[in-house]
Image (tube, rainbow, N blue to C red; front, side, top):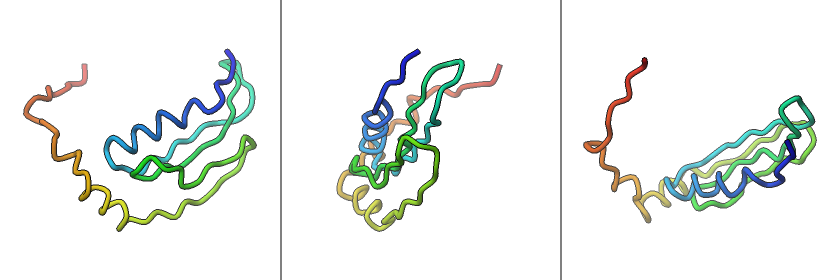
Amino acid sequence: MESRPGHVDPEDRGLSDFGREVVAACNRTGNGADGEFNGRSLVVGPWGEVLVEAEEAEGGFLAQIDWAGVDEARRFMPVLDDRRPDCYRRLEAS
């Protein structure tokens, strides 16, 4: 299996933008029996902006999150207000 450089970024940006959420995406680095992993863990803000991104090497980082900015994004575009919980079916463990 080949590494897919940057494959996490568009997906996580979309997730954060969809729900006006902060998304922290972690990825391992190096080679394993199940493929090659390019690292590049990241934290994405509520507008889909990358707040911090790691390198391809193993390591760690901290992200500073502006929670007031998250609240402002949710007020400006309250996408979660459009949810329809009455349409969801309850999932039971089997």
